[in-house]
Length: 411
Image 1: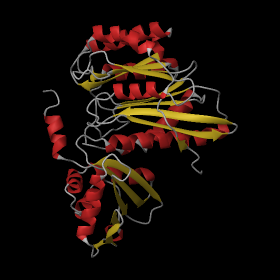
Image 2 (image 1 turned 30 degrees about the horizontal axis):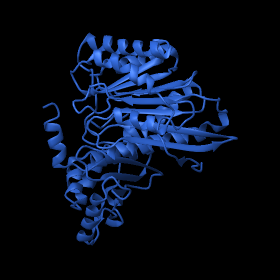
Image 3 (image 1 turned 45 degrees about the vertical axis):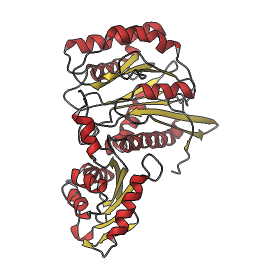
Image 4 (image 1 turned 90 degrees about the horizontal axis):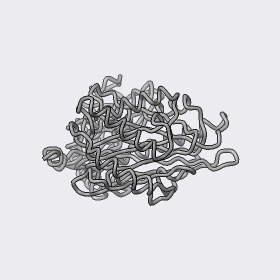
């Protein structure tokens, strides 16, 4: 199917009928925005994908339970940054329920249709007085504007250097359909479901069960294909809201294509903003039996500390790449391996080629110089056999700055 989706300005408020806000209520020592909300139109379907970490924040379980009890219906989500509200015993559940009940009352909604996500330091309970008092400003500033979406995207950040928003539109039949999203994530990124927090909106009405299946498929090749540091979070959540005129069944594949593209865009933005990173790493593997195998191998390469440090040092050490591929658990033919670092082929038929190592090093250096721009991506391509499938994963380099950030995270 030809991709008909085009990027547009805005984030979660780009689709019709969605409102957002982001305010500062004193949860972050910096005084920056730290409380956000997204509100969907009536009748919204909501799909969710959550961390598989056995140590989960209470808000994660509450979200999942509410989606099951409502059959995939929700109208709003409230998000706080600063405290994860994880590993604080029964208090965490009570606080999550109290915050959503208060917001539901302000919005005139049933509490079970309000979701909640938290991010920040594990083991710290929420300052309820600030959170509850801040809801007056949060609801007063709800708007369907680009500025409101940007404020919400800023309010969910922790160690992120930049906010992450993306929106797409296409014509489906006789109407324009839009998708919007925002995400946060910079460290603790090696998800087995999603990555930290992401929120997606869509102005087409869809069946909740179909929406759930479609989100899970999109997550598998986007958020589950990124890695920064090999750690998963206690709070990882992706929530996707869809509300509007029902979309005919014939057009559902086109919507699924757009959702996947949106998720991939947000996932790459998370990898690009990895803690201490100077470049985005994109690994594409081809020649496997299935796309899932290709993605597994690609993510193994992206998550290798040896590969990540070589990229940071601008060292074209291709041996680290093929070694990581060999331990991924995906079958490969060592005598069929072909490898490219950017435009430079360094391996053919499993044997090294004569290559200008200085030129490869300059390619890597140029990518670091373009950090946060369009040319900051280190592209690695690996062919492993004659299989029909391919897949990609995204990561970043590993620097001393990553160590500095995480050595002093709570001090």
